[in-house]
Length: 121
Image (cartoon, rainbow, N blue to C red; front, side, top):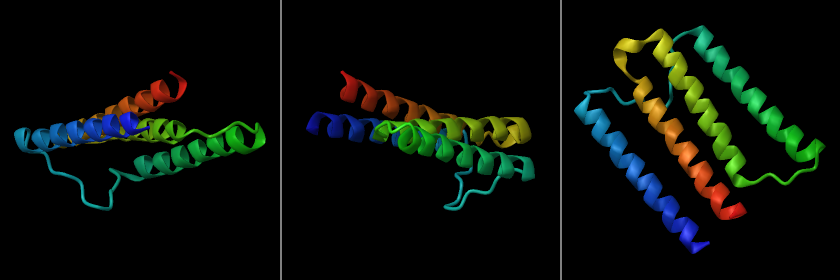
């Protein structure tokens, strides 16, 4: 458990450092505390994706009576950030904010596999 926590802290620290260097190197504008979608398609897509992922986790956990592991939520968050990166890339390529969303998605995927390997390994 302690090893998993140390690896998690190292992963998050590494990706936060990469994110900060990307913001300064590419002169990207970091998003505010409250994220604003590009347009209504993006907003409704995120709302429907969140509802779908929560419904999937609910059905998987309570109806099929499976144990919900922490890495399932992290995987769902990774899918959410990947969708956000796709929408930003489609609707606003010039701002290059999608690179930060790709990095956030990649961070969630790496943490997902880190949890998956420690839990099942």
